[in-house]
Amino acid sequence: MNNRAGIVAMSCACLLLVSCEREARRFQQPAPTAATPQAVPGSDIRAGAQPLTKATPNPAEQNAYAVAQGKRLFVWYNCVGCHAHGGGGSGPALMDDKWLYGAEPVNVYRTIVEGRPNGMPAFGTVIPESQVWQLVAYVRSMSGLLRPDVAPGRDDDLAAVPPESRREPAVPKTAK
Image (cartoon, rainbow, N blue to C red):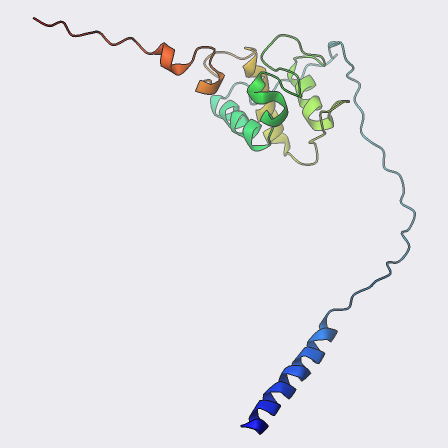
């Protein structure tokens, strides 16, 4: 029995020694090479909502499904974290008619893709172009810039009147 336990212990020790060599760890990294500076994409849109010379139509604004997808993406990409379902939070409100960089689809598109100073990150490398256009359509629908038959319905948490007070009052039964 002692001989068998010794063989098992020796086998375990050999396995441990062999397994230590399967991963080489470097404690000193090579010096970084000089990186070439990359040009940061800029925008010619400035605050004050100057009109663009060429209007770009949004392909998603005529499609109710695409606008509804934009609504889903607005929550999925955590736009609600800053814009609070369009009512504003740390980011500006999207339900009013005050658009710092313009309300045209291309202005909203470039804001999402390129970002803006003081808080709006650039999502151009993260979100596919088709989804950006869906987001643009939904964002514009929040302030009533789309046709009513295309705009999605609002959630109950966005309604001005709580759902409980919108119900018809119960008609009391009269006793005879």
